[in-house]
Image (cartoon, rainbow, N blue to C red; front, side, top):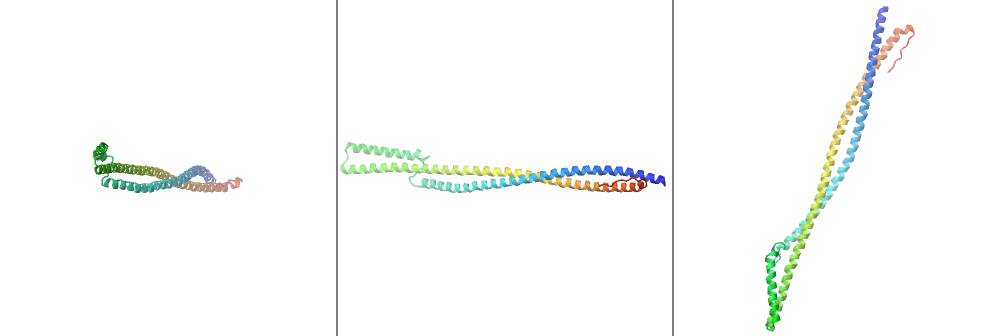
Length: 250
């Protein structure tokens, strides 16, 4: 009987050492998992806050893009009007394109008119005309002057209209360029948002995994602590006659 109690006592002490070691090991692993859990949740929350800030930037960039797109639409209407004005002037009879026609037909016409006017003026100065012929010649000189001015005037109108058309086109291009830059910036921020969201999701998964591990280690820690206390209770009962006591712990 004495040998049996001694063997039991020895086995209980060995079990006490084992469960104490397991309890300590589970406690360390639980604490490490809890530390990892805090780090993962902190990283996830930080990334989510950054995503919120970037989302605001995306909204601002989208608004900037839409603003420039609206301006482009308005500028296109202005350009359309300017282009229509140029077409109307070019299609008007006796009005030539100053960039093309004036270099040939129109220039030749003005030269012929100037030549004719010089001849008439010379003839008028010579005094070889009758009063009636002189009056008719003076009228013709005036008409030639009016025609030359008319040609030049409409040529300038076309030139000015084409300048306005060019400026309107330039404004369309500038606004479109600004809109494109805002669009590219928005896409760049969206890409960053997607990247940070993925990192936040990864951190969240790690948080859940480490939390699950921490809960598991804690459960094993509690189990080992209960076993340790049971061993101590049994040892206390065995050694009770000797007046020794063993404290319980969790």
